[in-house]
Image (cartoon, rainbow, N blue to C red; front, side):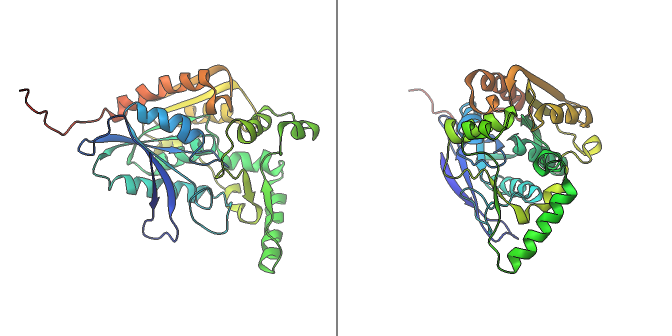
Length: 320
């Protein structure tokens, strides 16, 4: 694995990303590549990298896992901004970078995202036809989630509060940084939280896979763009690439089951595969061995079908 910094024209900071390489990697070969995108509040060292990125690389793909701008190891200030349009731009800038690598086939690039990263990856595929195949793992339309649960079903009131907070910060007030999760599962339950997604997210980020770059927080005053954003807009006409949607059948408040069914119906893609992982939840698909194996056993052949295998360029030496 190699950590790289990516800066493209028009950017004022670097994107930090981890490159995962196949076994017996040879720069003289030509490889299909996948951009693997982390969830909201996550980072490149967690599920997008240590589960899906690692498995895809082992299967023969060059995989790049970026940190979101303003988060993790990537630059951008102020910190902890969750801007869907910027996330999609990040992915497109990462594809620009991939296409400069001599061992990556620029015509065989796919994208995979988890949770909010799945929704962002769907939007990236809608507008960027360099992406030849798409896999969404328990993908969530973050704009819909923000207008509903994240705003306590009061999007207009939340926008007004954001406006007031931004005005206050310009005048010198401290930033308001909202924690997306309770400090622990126990404290969440004590506060009356019962939603499976919130409690299992807390277990994942606080216990199962804590990471320094994982913020699980959001700068409130800069979050307004997410409220009017839609990962699925124009999917009926513009989402034409082969797409696989993977999610569990134990629905929670983040809405991956609902969003997966919606985009499956709306996508214009002629090749669409729906993988409902029975008996498992949103966060089980982050790292639990059985459901992640089910997801990867379907995703890897799908990506190989549409992106192909590595092409060996070296000429074998004659036997003596």
